[in-house]
Length: 418
Image (cartoon, rainbow, N blue to C red; front, side, top):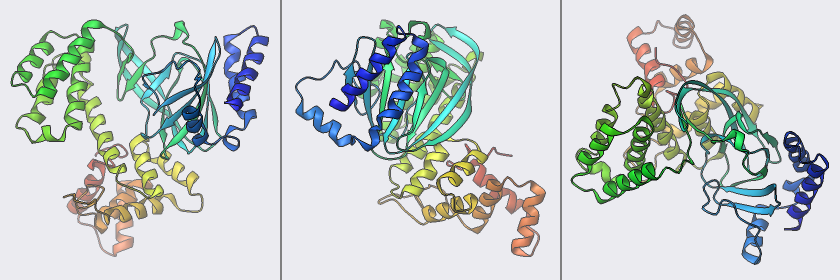
């Protein structure tokens, strides 16, 4: 496309003037995207039409579409290229990059989260144990430009609030000194998702074969593999079994389907370095539950709430982001109002009481939610109850309602149980 060819030639000219100084590329890419004004000059559908109409695509580095739905390379130079990424799925993994550049939101909006990783143990060259910590969260509107730093200087995830969303990336090829390119699993596992280890790959492929066949020897064979597996292989096998269990609804009906994962996880319980594995999969379960609910919710403000609960495990930051997106509204009242709306909505053919999957969202639950969102102390909660109801609260009932909110599938990432 002409507009991206001009953009690429501009970047090439400016970078060549620095003698291809790698440190200068990020600034050049950010400035070029800002100056080009792409969101006002090209629509995502024009890119789709161009792909259908051309017979001469630039070289496509990610032909397997491992990142994007799909990624389309629009311009390719010897040292860098320009991609457009279409996103149907809401979220990218927590990851870092082995390249430099910049990205721009071409269409839609995104929730951009940045993280730190505090390494505790380098188990191997491709597997680490540590602590994943949220650093910052921001809303990116259409046209927003952000730099891409290689390596651990940018550990981030993007949750795309609109479906589809489109982003444009100007990026170098891989920087060898920043390899491998890590993926992070809260609260504390990092691995190289691009590792091409023949033994690990074939073992996982064969395990998948057994799971898909529902072979009667599956549990015995997988257990045998776990007894001999290194930590990386153990985690990868658990992740495979967990993912298979989540996507195969029919599997849930078989006796032992749930116990399979628990049984395999038990093989790691005496390994100190695997102590975070149960927490990793508990977090995966929490996110999976919210993603399933977000898929059946249609109103933008309700989808925004679920996006926040999925990605922002911090009460004050959630309130700040709601206030930023809806500046004329009280964020606590707004969230409680959304919960009331969703508590009165049921999914078609679902046995759950509402799309939130929470039983009895009554006045007591809503009062507890409001108090926790405000960050009130126990004494302040009791005082608020007296002011609202003109009577002293039943400590047992009030404690029960607070615990229901803190431990619910949606809010347990936001409030810690007492």
